[in-house]
Image (cartoon, rainbow, N blue to C red; front, side, top):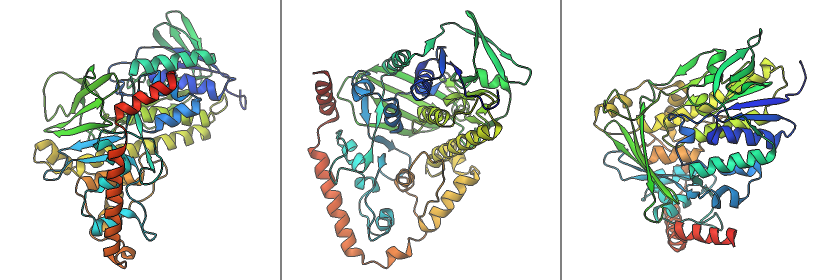
Length: 474
């Protein structure tokens, strides 16, 4: 089969992750014969359980060709502009991590360098998305100063999964409703078929979207890297209730004694819960999980997607993002039926590097937090991964952030957390020190005031959603 194109794919796993994979494969590679074995996502499949998303979900919808009506209105989604972090830096006010620009470059140098020198207001007051979110408002990016930002969604999970299933079926994806019983291998170690209650499912390629158990990927063998020494939270409790008031455009994450709790307000449902370390708080209950990642999410002819490839706590809501990113990578790097090792190695390198930087970004929140409880003291003393140590060392010296190719969060996202939690470099850029600070400070104040005034005039999140629904459904 050397050089022959891939002809058939079986996706094991239902829910958002499985149906998103099937829809993307069939939409972008219509010659493929795609079948879904719609296994119900398990409780610890956080990509399918948490409704808050990063802005990347909108790009994924766009790649599928989904209209705004399909992706937002008909799935009862709401918008989200970022997260308000409460209690993560003792003695400091809460801060917002929003997506997009925080200020603008001044005299050819980064805005945050000038803020470090002259800023007299919190860093997030210069971010359009944060300004809108703090007022409970929403507006699509437009003219300055309310521009240069991104937004994610708060999904109605059941409606999103149903939409993706219907779209995939419309494209020609087949659904084989049954239970997964076993995996049958060929002599060369490749998977030949999935044995189900309705008979075998044979394919050239198998996509594992079964959640952290990674039922198919585990059957092929290989190491899983344990990240619990860096991300020790291992319990998650989730609750949901109808949204009783107009939804906020920011979710909230609050530090607690041994972890954090959260609130995500959607158009029809509000999701609350907590994530904590059972070693520091042995309270009963919660969904057990363990942070870690497959060193090789793709092995032989099986590729793990989402939580089956990398499992992290849902701080910053990266689980679905990693799933969608893995799907995009699979589509763009689809090899031939022989699954040439050189191609699979590059897929795995990119996936591994991306997952590691997500891990680093989550760990950043913990190691820069100043709280007195034992959990937080233990986190402050943890030995850092080399990549995060390099980032923090560079920032601590001159306020600079190194570039990594497979980065999920932009520089301003790293700055939002670092500066929001009170981390300051020893020195600032010498180019900035050579500029007269007085006019810079005055310009920053004018920009901040203009942004606050524009945010106050914007429609509320609820009003924007209502107008969008009227426009689409009229």
